[in-house]
Length: 294
Image: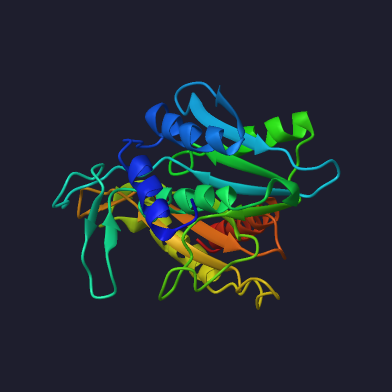
């Protein structure tokens, strides 16, 4: 099953299953039908409640000899909405010629039904006596992602089936397929900032309290932060301002509030809680200092 043509055929079967996040049903049917003949015991379960659930997940395991190591393939079957601009149906896989050979088109071909197809083909070539192999697949990665991987980890913990090694098939290539592998993944934390002011007419600024300069000053200090210089496995952590909101429809009114959003991607020198606390400390200090100067 490990030939490139087999991988493409498997990917086509998965792409043909509409699976906009949160995915359920057909895509999991297709994957289960691929794994069962290879000796995998397939378990499917749902986790979570509305509005972000329920989410369908799949855990499939093929045991190896007693005491052998456990290798897991991890990924997701859900995809983002197709959007506009498709020249063919997004869930109708199509092979098209290209200068380097055929390319497979369809929603999820890269992220990440193609990778899951490659995992299935690879697992078919792994000898039974090499060790335990499992698939840890969620239908909730592209959305809120609250009831996917977390629920799968909890289920593996409960059964004592914790992998020794795990390969996530997310696309990381730069110039060509497979030219990069990443060890681990950076963390992510989002922070929402809000500065309250006092609304008033621009002709009488002494009667108002403009929150916009305070927020801009706060953001400039946060934007200037150098969190670290990187580690052996990860690039430097970075803080990015991703949104700035005032929503003032009038040209002659000082607004009552200004808001912003920050996104931080961080390496193994930090935790999300520590970074959120650091941003909060700077924001609170800067707000108090600016209020004292007002």
